[in-house]
Length: 162
Image 1 (tube, one colour):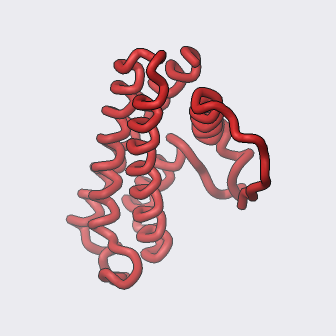
Image 2 (cartoon, helix red, strand yellow):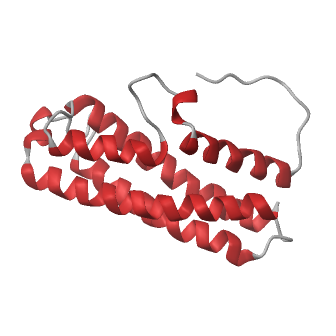
């Protein structure tokens, strides 16, 4: 859990740079940020798809992660879109590339979240046993991972520019 403290506001440029550096760091150094048996970033996709394919995924955690990751990637698109609008000195195509990749990630994570609803919508433990749902989710996770890999490279280019 991270905490917030009062501080002097920074420029939009510094805020975006710091946020993107943080996202990149989490994806590259997962063991610094999570419990020993957990993964973040691109490695997490491998763990997730393997757990689904080997039928080791727990329905509640799978559904929770699906909705959380879907929301995070939707918000990434919004963050990058707003950053593009605020940082007029950064070539728009720099942000456009990253936005394009994260739209794909977001769309695919939404497919996973729809396959395994969380909360009041339809928290059905049997969904994790549905072969078609699992196959669709694995395919969506692989597509999301590829797009995220490319998206992270685009984020690195934005950071370099900033």
